[in-house]
Image 1: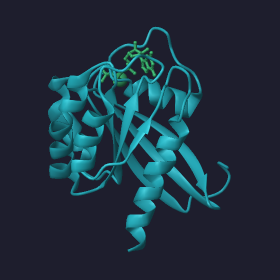
Image 2: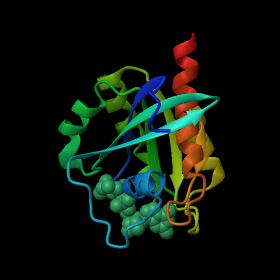
Image 3: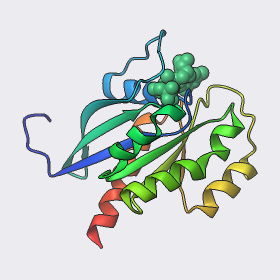
Image 4: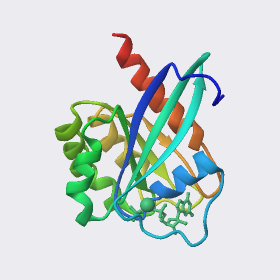
Length: 173
Ligand SMILES: Nc1nc2c(ncn2[C@@H]2O[C@H](COP(=O)(O)OP(=O)(O)OP(=O)(O)O)[C@@H](O)[C@H]2O)c(=O)[nH]1
Ligand SMILES: [Mg+2]
């Protein structure tokens, strides 16, 4: 796969509160591992993975952005020319979903109305958020939602495929 030049290059950013599992999802997707001693992401960390979809090669430049408030300004710079974004929330933490507009507003302000996929992470754990709450918040914002577990490797690759498809569809029209 790496020997062929990509047909497309996408810059993807990971948004969402600290500790929702952004780094874990990326680690799982890119390296198929999960470090037991994961620490908070300081600033921004780059990862690259190529995805083949319908015979086309999509090079994904993946920015893992630390979710802590103190990195807000830095995140804005990394969002500036993003092709798409993941908004990740943690199903054991309602606030991480309720904070959605902070994340989307700063993304859209920096990058314009780019493609977004919402990710409900930690589905291996009991949820404290009802389906109605999730639907209410996400549908009102026109977002599709993927349920993942970085820990158990559930649907992580599906989330990336969804985002690349969404970016690709927008590019066609
Ligand atoms: N049970 C469970 N725990 C998870 C899952 N994904 C991540 N975690 C745990 O959640 C904690 C936070 O994960 P991180 O990936 O560091 O979170 P983050 O969003 O990158 O946090 P910041 O870098 O501070 O923004 C860690 O203890 C992970 O092991 C999951 O799918 N299931
Ligand atoms: Mg992190």
